[in-house]
Length: 386
Picture (cartoon, rainbow, N blue to C red):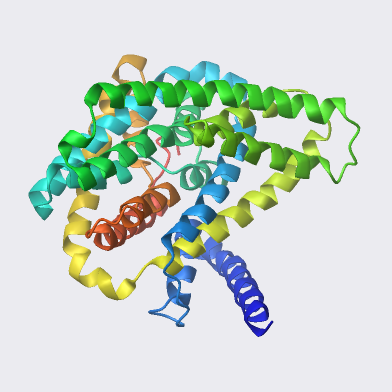
């Protein structure tokens, strides 16, 4: 009983600390997501001494939280935004992820001397932008943008996770079993099937959510609970079926948010609070798992890779993907700069640890530092129109 009470006390204290620390961050302009990570780091074994070293638990917490965030992201994305920005966003979410992986993978091979599968694995882990970080910057950070570039960045951040996740899983298999462990043709087929399956499952799930909420006369207080449960059902069922649950839950949110839904306003308010809670739990949990005492010996290669990612890989990938879509030079530069990494990258960094790779802990710590660097540059990002 004492253990349970201690866990409740500790969890509540961390939550309260995160919330009140965020108030300070608004005043000094620090990224909130970075603040939540710092709370986790400060409470961990190198800080207050809370010992947490169970990667599967962290992965579970992060996956559920990310599913909620992606559903809310889709829910708040107008259909008009998709019509205006689907082309460039999809290019960034697919080709952009592959190009970023290739460039950072070469840099990791040269800087760290890792094998090609391990170098590309590290690159794939940090290849996707983070929905929580990007949505926070664009919607809370006072950034003023033309609708097309704003929608492109929001849709990219909500839909580029499946490619990064699949690349990470495939490259983890190759790092464990050798290059011959995966056939390129099978990898490409798996990618297409995962994306297609996620889109179909998300569409079915979105219409299911709308149908259930509008057809059954539920108590107003139950509507948000039912929507939340159905969103997680779509996420879990799609993953079990072998498709992309992350894409599915985003598409489900997109369809539900653009439909006539009973109690839509109260649902939006509920999801706003729930999304904040999910972000806090996810980032604090991931912060607890990190080991800051190991950072110094990995700092130089991590900073070098972060520089390649921010100043070479992301800008080149964005330029290639947006070139056919007639964005202004300033909009392309802004899209390149706002390549924020976050919880998705740290979550994916747990995969090598769970796969039993000897370099798993080092990869996790390096990715953690790369994410911190990415979030530190967030306050200096400014709209070309501002």
